[in-house]
Length: 76
Image (cartoon, rainbow, N blue to C red; front, side, top):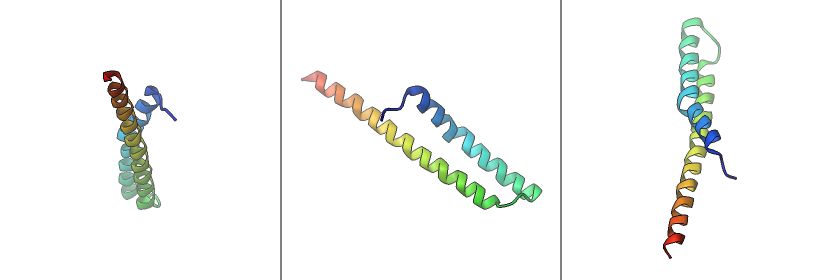
């Protein structure tokens, strides 16, 4: 399944900006205000972020590979 550039860019923004910011915010607020399950929430956010990063990495690899295959075919 191909991912559109718009979806890729949106997911990349989520992975690089939103999820790390959410994890940091919750971790800080849980320490300051005594919110429950600080480590568990941040661990879950980090795991989701790592999974999303892996998906985006595979998508980038496939995109680059597809571009190289097209260049190789054109050289024949």
